[in-house]
Image (tube, rainbow, N blue to C red; front, side, top):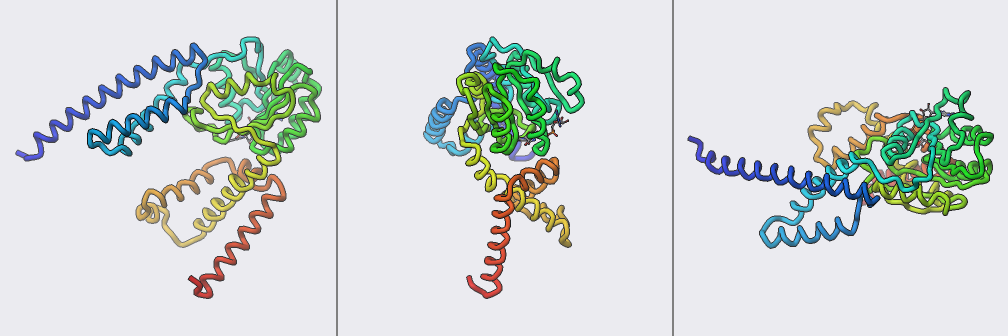
Length: 336
Ligand code: NAD
């Protein structure tokens, strides 16, 4: 008989008890989801989460359980909970809205937003590239028109919308760059305008804790409900001037994506076996390789458009190249 067996049996029992507790907790969270939906409360409540984690850390420490362990477990459980809270749909913030049109709504990000609007009780219609012959019907009486087409098609698509827009409609976009689309929307539309940039891709399980950059355009009071709706979905809105946004994106997106692209391209030309590199990499190095994998698995055109969006991006990338040379010189000169 294996001397570990009795203890292993006890561990199995504890694990079973944990599963029962998780099941109980998930059932309670489902109740919370229903109530949040009913009262229109945001999925993500940062204060409640911070207080709860601080309290659990203290309680854990008192019982000799590492506080970080409990925090890790709770955060993982909460991530599960946020995703399951979506199941109940969301409160409709503005009951007066008759119709929302998502231009490019059959695409990846437009599709995600169309789904969230539908789950929030709004009537949603899609205007895809093949639907323009029907545009007057699709756009008639729309309260909100959201543009979400490829970056290089955005300005011409906004222009194309002009004849169908009336003053009471809200015009918004979800493009990853903001200054030019916002200026174009303000130019062709006399009504309310807002530029939004969701800082996430279409593959998220929940909008909880995600960031949406918000560039105000005109008549903010008319689209406040839209921002409130996005908050209910769990996202955090970050107001920013469109030009400042684009400047920040030079560093957050263009420079980062370029480096990842160049690193991946270089790696693909080197005499290495990826499987071997992965086997020898600790988690943090794997993460770096995973970032490269993620970029190359996505739409090349989207990344190319983000990197080459404006001359400033290429100038900053060139300065990175100079820093590479400067850094190289340290090593060539043996300068530690
Ligand atoms: P996508 O290619 O998946 O979707 C674009 C959709 O627009 C397609 O269905 C296409 O048929 C349609 N389309 C093209 N031209 C059109 C036109 N003239 N009229 C109507 N529809 C048209 O691209 P995506 O990844 O969903 O990106 C769309 C927008 O979202 C881009 O502006 C991008 O910057 C922004 N965005 C994307 C992500 C992401 O991770 N995918 C994240 C943040 C922002």
